[in-house]
Image (cartoon, rainbow, N blue to C red):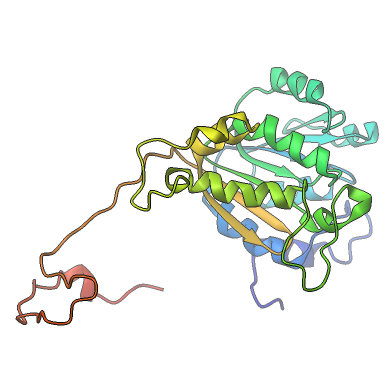
Length: 273
């Protein structure tokens, strides 16, 4: 049994000896990430888009995980993938590196997305173009994920391998784009104002995808080979200060008088598991 057992592990175990079941190929760290960020959608009406239908196995896995309320949009470059269309699944055929293809897809979508998963061709142009055009289609409180990020280090996918001991990673890869997202996430502080500013640095505006991320990219989560973006409305940072007794930086002459506030009951109650 894996160290972290999820419904995805159970599904994979259930079909392990099923020679007629569509193939699913995933890496171990993905399942914990999936369950951590997507469990809130289980048993509800949920709309997802997955780039990379291939043999149809993953779409069946998602159907098993989310339940009958799943509305699935699949994207693949191979026309053979359309054989998996059904009353709950629509398959679009095209090149994810082509912006015109995504324009046509968005016109055919019936609703915004709760979850977008890029498991497509894994080339840098494909991943970056897909993020720039489809991240805005994920609604607030939704999730955008890109997996198989190992290709950011593989030259045949347009990445650059990182030499042992190197301090700088590959340039122009999706991994590098995700590092830039960390700056976007901290944009209110990027000018050096450690207590935050009321607006983000304007230098980000010229970067495709930055504006939407700055407004709605609430958090980033990395696991080996996979990244999740949780979307929510981002507001200018506000810090909170409570209590009165304070030791000034560098001071050693003050002493607390021992008085304190009553501890709220909620703070002393046992924490549920």
